[in-house]
Image 1 (cartoon, rainbow, N blue to C red):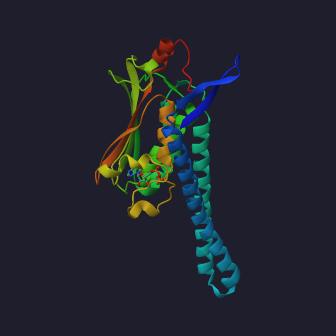
Image 2 (cartoon, helix red, strand yellow):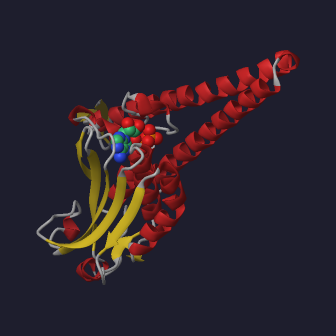
Image 3 (spheres, rainbow, N blue to C red):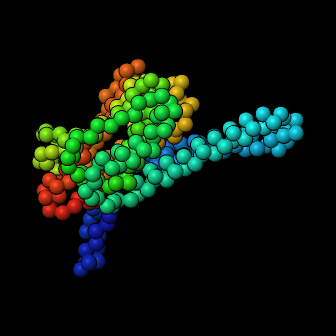
Length: 285
Ligand code: ADP
């Protein structure tokens, strides 16, 4: 963007010259484009279940009498499933937009074993129903990390939910948490010298993700085209995960092999060391 500004000489009341300001607005344009793309995707995604629900209601209304009891039940069940899908979509869109607009989250010392155990309690039944072994391994005396409990709970729920969704009966899903004594560098400059982090891994023995899709799966609404595609999902789960982990000054990584399984992992700063390094609790701005 180029701005031209006239500069006046206030004593002589004449024009002294013209100032030219050149601004790089690539990022601004990109953000606007991403936003319009997102809105158009959301509208499209919302329209599909709405259209289905309306069609089922109309058919039931107009031809209900001619349908068998079984057919009527099937129609109602499908409409109900579509309503659930719509609810999930709206919730995910709201979560994502809240994450993107809320600049400040409360960070505190979080014992990660708690959100992990809460996630396991939530998903244990689902895993048993699917015939998948869901386990966890948390290093004893794991130090607390810098985190936001609710956001971390959402990360675990999304990653474990996906792992179960994309793993077949007889498979395994495991969560691991351990201290990493390494030179791993977190994104934030303020935390770069921090010596220890807690590494979290969520692994499955599921269908795996092709190398060429491994970056795109974090994009909003991206879902790998495969036979599992019809399973419930919004394509927003991993965008939410990435956003949350970035708010924790970190990044999500994955290793995956088709037909073998996938491991998502990320590191979180150890609270005690990060807090003393910064002199106070870190805040996102
Ligand atoms: P969805 O609601 O479709 O699960 P996500 O953003 O959570 O959306 O995931 C995007 C896509 O990434 C999924 O549709 C799936 O194709 C792929 N994916 C995510 N997690 C896994 C996994 N553990 N194993 C295999 N594929 C996965």
